[in-house]
Image (cartoon, rainbow, N blue to C red; front, top):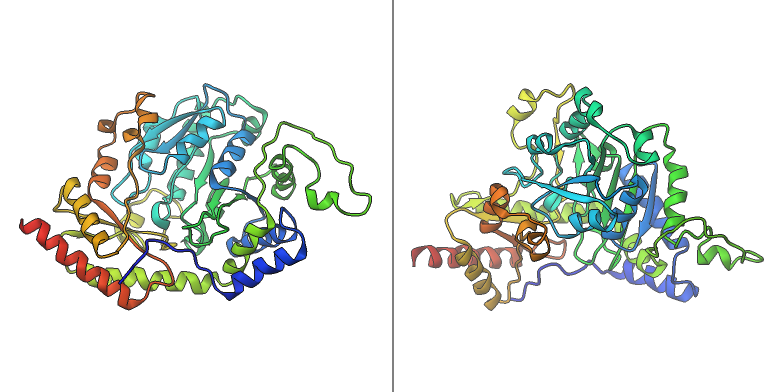
Length: 419
């Protein structure tokens, strides 16, 4: 039985939406992109969304808007995909890595220790779709002592008046805290619509704007749209309208717009997102139901870490409810080594079962080693990586496939441990 890791969800509605775009004669940025932005705004209940061609370019543009200087620092978790830190570098800033917690989210206590007068943004990552504690992070960056420490180096930083909270929400479209989307707890969040994500446009992303007054998010969206088209004041679709050829280039932008033919794929999917999320939860729950009886299986977090955390929190409005976006199933296996984990992956592959690992910690990658980062400074990230194996999770995965996968996972684990 062949089980791929993460095939895109392509049904007749997706095909029809793409076909409509192709037959319209307009395949680059135009009405489909506009419709996708509006659907995302509705789904997440945010004022403004701007589509781009990838999460990475969206994060770079958001940080360029913030006006990073070479000495400006952005705090990122050591356990994430390389794009999180690379976006900071590409935007002209310096990534500062901190460790994670057992739930795979950024450690708020380590954030506090890492903040300096050069800190301009914090970039938490919702690994697998489980949201970070944004209420706690917001409490940190709005505290009197941290605001006093803040030293702006650009006009937008000065107006904001504090560290910006920029969420890497590549995995967490649909995730909620206290019944509200993650985007409602951040200044800016960036979604990914890459081929393996909950919603895909093949390649793509969306910038969600939720900046406080005096910023006008709807007006700011216009700036992001212009800057995603080389700073050009009109997109190609607008220029095709009768006598609409004249345009200006008002700033040094990027060429990172999303084409309509890509937006069409995501548009059809986002309109049935409730169904897709329900099916992802079905897969997640079936894994949990089977694996929870094994002491060696450290299950991924699904809802609140525990009730006591909310009670003990110093927050005036603590987290009372968390909803996962069910993007990944990052299982950790407590009683095997990294080499044994890799062997388990290979044994499953021989059965045509595809699995993955999320992620190799940033300090273990050559590009960041050269910058002086050391994995020994991030013990939880290192331990998480050594024992993690990601199981397939997508709406098309049948219960029969799940059971076949679990049967072989348990069997091969026992073989490896017993040997």
